[in-house]
Length: 116
Length: 111
Image (cartoon, rainbow over all chains, first blue to last red):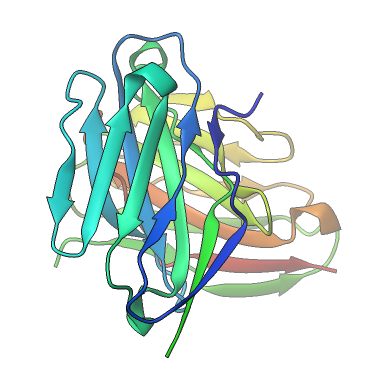
């Protein structure tokens, strides 16, 4: 069963628009970590953020922000004032304590296309 | 420079010809993993290892073997590759529950 769902396959925006990527996860663990990774057209995987299940504070890093809501099992990612360099595939992922942190389960990814 | 290296980066082979993709990390990480990436499916974990001589199956282990004889190396072995194993493969390493560091990827084509 898919534990991480990214329902948006592709989002297209014009530069300077905001874009929000949804991530819904499923777990029975009370202790877990959530991650976001970026995969630009060059193909490498770039770590963006890690959030543990006990920390529901929203986080902002420059133009990036994350909204973690345990009540809805969501960990959404917003890019403010998007730029062409934000064009990439973005993955949400889940790691659970019950797997001794060995398993990392990814969503299918959301392709973001930013046009000038 | 802290990094995960994979070799080869590109490989075209034929059905049934055994191959090994190497993975090495220089960060002294306990955890290492192999993933495959296919369009529309994201990354799926094949095998992972939490330490030397400790390996476990991920979500898609069929057709693959791994070994972890040294902390820094985690090779992926395809004993009899088939066309459905054509994919982009990533190796990764991490400390326990921290972020994973990924290698550059190996694009495998099985004819």
